[in-house]
Length: 368
Image 1 (cartoon, rainbow, N blue to C red):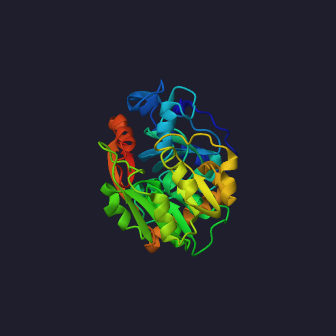
Image 2 (tube, rainbow, N blue to C red; image 1 turned 120 degrees about the vertical axis):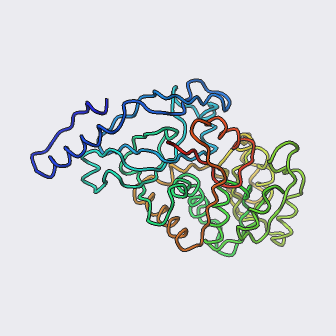
């Protein structure tokens, strides 16, 4: 248990003081906590809120964060459904923000203190307390709310690598970038960041999210009908490929950023310019089916299926990307929209809302 942890104490007064402070801090961290747990994979109701789940233990080079918010992301639904396998049982989520509640000796030596406000991304954030490696912590700047800071970690960092790195510099300033689903979630960020990079942006969205999408600064917006009974775009309601070719004077898009998946893969590939790149990063409508690589020969096109963890491999890369994002926020170049905040007790409702395609911005759990 946390209160029974034993730590090696150095002989110096500074180390003794750190140890004493740490033990006092640990006594305030309970042995159990509230958490949204998956014990069997399935639909949204597989998320069960438990009030006596074991609190994580403090490990070397880490801290314990008392969470204030946890982000809700599509990847969380893939874990819950078993599309991306995880060992059972597990606490959902991988995006959090809150206050440091306990600090290891190694983290304290790096200057991390109890009470520091931080955001981070590790597995297991739908809960009151999360153990976080010190190298994964992002200090929250003054003037940035914890809800916004939490929103930056997965969606913000994902949009950053999508628009700055995943395209392998195959798109240059002034060239066209097609981004699907700019009315909600990650691609709201991506559309704004693509403009910051100097790309010309074509966004797609549904009629129900047109008001949000119009505020993002896209050079061209393709508005689709909604699939009956849902808030999702009906990508067959508009000839998107023809519209892209018209807007780009027959050239096509040098980069397509696609988090939709199954419903848009053909549109994305057919909208590419010669030697353009299809960046497929999500499965909102279902996983992209396998296709023969020979299909890319017509335009000598490229395709990549990236993930965030491969673009924040080092502490330096993580801090650099986060620094850009927080800087753009402070400079007013980037706006973050929090759509809805659910109490953690409504864990299933948060996933249902996301999977219904209703979001016009970030979804969060508020954790008491």
